[in-house]
Image (cartoon, rainbow, N blue to C red; front, top):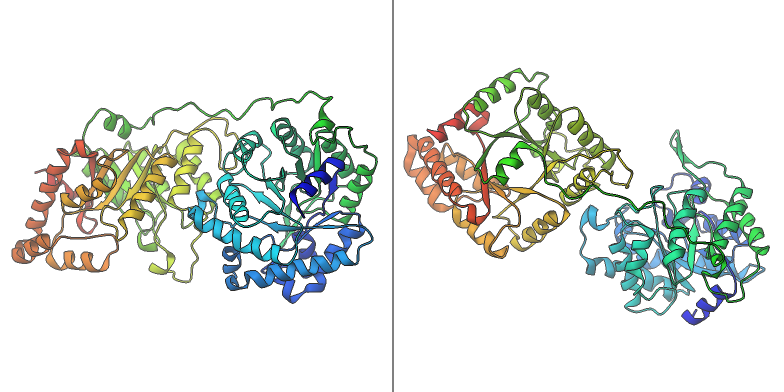
Length: 620
């Protein structure tokens, strides 16, 4: 279909699209692990869903290809079946259309990759290539236009549009998904979406999924109020709930959807359908409601709402104005004081008495400002770092707990952080991705990794702005000092610099390096950064105690590089290697104290073999 023809259709009439594909297939084929694979193994089931919507009066049916991209299929071991499953999806839809009594358009359904920028940081060019591959397969088999739907990240949506426009001139409907608060998962409002899409070659912009009909209306009003293009709307049936191992949607009445269709049309919406939980009955009600509506004389996509005042949202999401973190650690850094932290591992048992005793002695020295706490190093079980941090804060010791994204999903991470702030008194957090479970005592366990460290920084930044990841207002805001890890001796330094810059962009306040044993390593990394670190850095220092320990760390532990000169010095020292290692660490600390012009604001010290009090020897 030519773009001009599609535009003309939307001027003449409202197009009614089909409803849910996924939840209908779920009912028919049970909990199949990959719904797009049904295009090959259960063609008749998919055909019947299309047929039911056509019989209900749908003028647009979407192919069963929402997740048929290389990345999502790859999670099921089907990454090489992109062309096959998209071809089959179009073929089934075309067969259903051939049996229809009225004209039906076929929309090639394309969903997000499941790896939005804040989750997996996939390069734009790779995203564009993945979308191009899927869209190419859909166009090859004869779709009339594309529907990009349920996108929560505007950058990913733009990558999808650009991937399609790199070869295709078919019409595109670009639809995002918004929460009840009116923002996408990435924090974008409909008006902001339009600002970023208005220069793109798309034919309609819309909203679908996540919310039901009534919460969708104010979002459509905002979108119609700013967009110069037709608007599409495809709400869920409502909020789902889990019953046993099934996801069940409320039985919204068809009459309810008919009312929604009337209100949406009055706002100027030109493509109306349904998303999760909707059925042919809902679509039939929309069809009947649309029949009663007369097209406006101008045919403009917004003219149906022209007699109404377009009401802006009562108030755009207000975020807490920029402010510096409130922790004592951050205050000292801002005052140009050289800060010192000592790293500890949480206990593996059920008591913290020994840890509290050791930390008390370290802090009583007056040389140490904070205690940073490892989280599941090498994927081994220990007490939760945030919980232990809260216990130490209760004793009056400032902490920097490490938080890994390996063990909890986005909901769990936010729940822990809110508790750490409000109950534990934790004010600093080091955001890390975490070692994979395969390294530890539970290789059969699965890592969660819904976000990586960059995503976790964004999550912390949002909590600091008074909203959760989904944009819901918290009724207050945290004010964490956000730390991130950086490795100046990484194997791929360009990638390390790129990720470090992404972490800073996401909202990091300071960084902590991997242990380094030569100032030259930092100097080299600093050159790649452009000569200056964008945030204060605590350099990691580790007093080595033997040649064999150094040799093992250098050869077996990822991210640690020990210079040959240090290895030779420890080997030559023989029985006095420990004294040699501490002497070398003192020299490194002396360098760090004088390296403020190189971005060094302090150090964190790694005690030998968890004998935390021994680290105080560095100050003698």
